[in-house]
Amino acid sequence: MKVDFQKIIVSIISILICLNLSAHDPNDITYLFDEDRLKIELTPTSILDLIDQITPANQNNEIMKLSNYDCLLDNYFNNHIELYTNGKRIYLIYVRRDLKSHNGYLEFQLSHKLKNDSDASIKIDAFHEVYLTVHEQIILHGTRIK
Image (cartoon, rainbow, N blue to C red; front, side, top):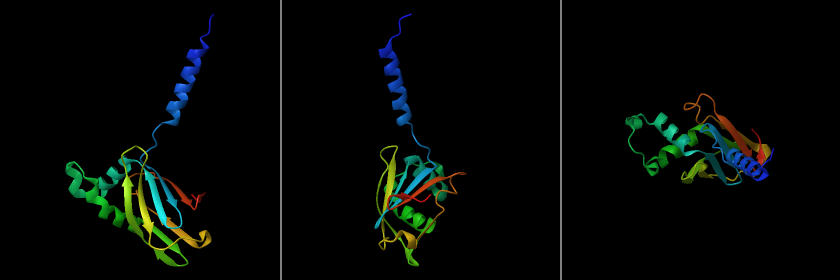
């Protein structure tokens, strides 16, 4: 029996590439906090599901222009992400989004610098009205805290 090792290697590489490129679920949300920014990594589907949930006017499935929802997203995340340092509330200021690929993000500037990890308090309840289960990762200054 002749074994074609080249075909086996190509098959293994193809499987590994597919596993590596597999899409993550819309309910997988990562919050990356640094000293003056918050980057929320998510999928475009996550944002569309959120907008559909919190804006009943859009239930008629109109084509969405995401720039029309920038203020809504700013308000939503300020209401669903409570961030404190030294007892002072830090607010989010919407900066930009990139939802052109499956691995999209929203970026916010923080109203005050977040310097000392031990003085930080973070409470997030975003997307809980959209998905039954939300898988959150919270990363503060490069260290995963949840």
